[in-house]
Image 1 (tube, rainbow, N blue to C red):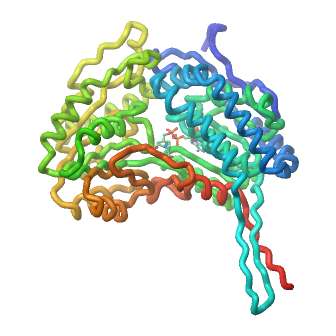
Image 2 (cartoon, rainbow, N blue to C red):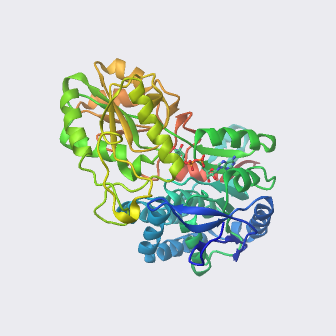
Length: 487
Ligand code: NAD
């Protein structure tokens, strides 16, 4: 396909240098439908070069003091923050998310990921025990593992990639990262800042390309003992299979089908705006987004009326317009998949109360070919419907009624996923009871998406294996050794 010179062309970042690739893939601007960028289509050869650079850099980097590494991470955070607006513009254009979301969530969090782990590594402790009766003392040592393979998805591109890079290098590993082929631009921009931040050549290598070629080459590389992956459950199954012969250490952050449980004593003035955000923020393309809303029967009609009326006020359109609430979905294929779920729900007899197929979407002239859809609310969906069981990962949420606490816990748990849940009630005892029994790695009560990075993040069941966070990332990205001294 012929391309004009105006296209942005990315290069791999290996051993501290930008390296062109022999073939490229097109990357689209989701809000216009135009190809605007070309991404290296890397394979085994490029991954091999990146792993070698990371391996060569490991002895020096891993022997630096935590303070030296901390200073470099802080400097990198400062440099990204200094360019925050350029990063936010790039993320919005590449992913379709609103500029407001990129400015207030994605890029600030990427900065904070580096600052957080820059601080966290200064406070690491190991264990020591004594067995006085046999004259022994035991203690543990933790050492970085080696070359970490980091694979991230398209929904929160720099946010999720730096959530892996920051702890990996903070604890002394070197990395080969592979961002999603659909959203590679901000990772490439970050590479331009590494040298200035003082990150030695080879400590962070970024190889761009598809999962099937570049991702799989990384997963199968014998010199990469650890893979941190965020993405779909299906891909995680493949990664698990491919890495099994090498017995790799895996951290898997996967999909969700997250319930919101709203009891009749909930404060709806807080619950409705937050549940709108938890359903539709970032076009519903956050693994933590709510997609099943269980409302206690006494307030069901009132909730539905107010929720739908507020959803209709969401302004969908050009993501670079700061007044817009919802931008474009990531790709044409993904938009069709999400729309397909709404059609299936209708065919099963559910009622679409607003959004797709019900309301009309007026788009600016330049965005007519973009991948947009309106916030969509579906009611009267059966629990066994695919819309209540499968991850849709778009701006679609299902609302159903329930009667008792016991019933709603069982229904909320009746999916294969277990990532996040929200519980809305002013009864403290109930909130604790329900939170304890939900099969979910994260439970937010009377709020959503408030995170303390010190604490574990991750899902149960098909939503993942392992946790990341201060202590958990420390354990994942280091190898522990127990030493016994007899005196
Ligand atoms: P995906 O699984 O298709 O891709 C994720 C990454 O894996 C991409 O970089 C992709 O190129 C790569 N990949 C694909 N096939 C591969 C293979 N065979 N070997 C190695 N790498 C491969 O996921 P996606 O569509 O990019 O992202 C959406 C999914 O991510 C959703 O399911 C969402 O819930 C999940 N997600 C989870 C979290 C979390 O923290 N739990 C956060 C964000 C997104």
